[in-house]
Image (cartoon, rainbow, N blue to C red; front, side):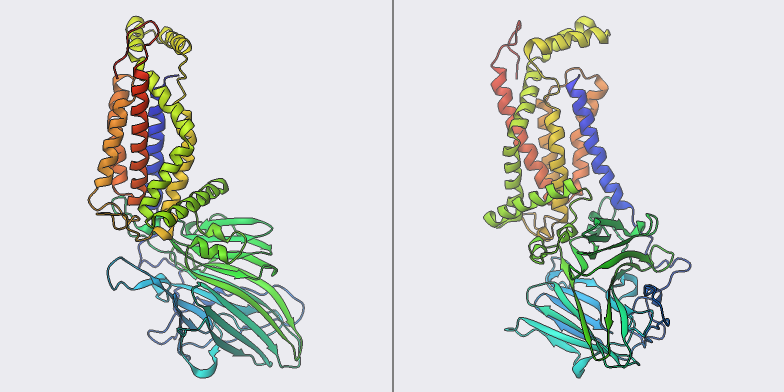
Length: 575
């Protein structure tokens, strides 16, 4: 087997993979402002100008079938109650009718510019509509859907967490025509993005009341505005829904595939649902013992129609004079691994989307843990990346040693191999037999440099997604000209260094057995990789340059070591 030809194949495989990743980010939704035929807008008919729009009534689920009189949804009224604002140290929420219609992440500015406004995760703007909604449905009684008139108790419209306070609670209430009251309380705690949402159903009527609670996340899919030369960060990660049940495990789906990939109807306990985007996500997390049904829906026919992920259940039965309570957590915030783990929810850490494949996701999780430990040591994410490369190199040293040792031996025997080519000319069969005899005699493993590369590729790709997905690196500086590891190098210094390292490595690598065309292709490889890396986040290019520089040093040392040995039956080879 010709080793250099195998290297060429692997190199082009790497290029193809990187190009595929970039192309995949280019597959975006239709241009904003185009309203497909049949699409239902997110605004409420009759709402006052400037009011917060709600998801369309089509998004209300049907109650599970039950004997008896068919129930009715509580009537919706538009624009009659002012929104309520809750401000903590990390969140500013806007609620209307008992739903969260806006959420600002106060510790995450949109850009690195001074005075930049905070990231708005939930948004009432119809073109970017994104809301967390809660409602009830019943087949036997009147029930308040997410469009029903929940009004704030106490008459206040602005709540702020005190400087010495640990939490702030805001109650809403809905009163039905048959003596049933639903009291919904939002509790926001200091330092956390998990909001407790508690519904208490109080039956003061004369008849039993039955109903099912549903919680859903509704969003108009985003339009990414970037391209290959200036990629939109939103294109780096999954934009879509993910869910988990104890019975069926983890599932995920892009917005574009909500309908095309078939229906989702998973019933189980230990469930949660979420909508993901780059660095941030929202999730509904009911009690682990509650039995719910997870489903996906599109409220319309166009790509810009609201997309929903929903949990229906559990059902409750409330007798006259009784009260029943059900609660859940609503996460609205960044993909901070430490805070997510603190919620102690099975599978929720998969919201940090390192990979759709479990093995790669686990590998990515361990790489991030190591990166986080190094950040605690260096207090700089750029140096943590450099340290991570060093540790990975040390862990893979035996494999790398075999790789570079094989390359060094191949380089030493280039004159002998060239002599064989001249001797046998175009007789490829005799040439291959002679080269195999040489490999056997000199104990050269022609694939010794290929297998280590194959084994290291999963680590590289896992680390690729770790660096893209980790919100901890967002707007994080390294040094000098690199002031944002998630943005591209403004002066292209790292990509140029990468090309120089690749060129130097190529000069040390044997090209024995390559025809002139293959040699020309290999000569252009540093340039191809350099162009690809120009528009990648600086943190990724820093990893690549560091990894390549350490490999170049190791290869140079081994070449010097084996250049001192004489080939069998020949003169010493020049380095």
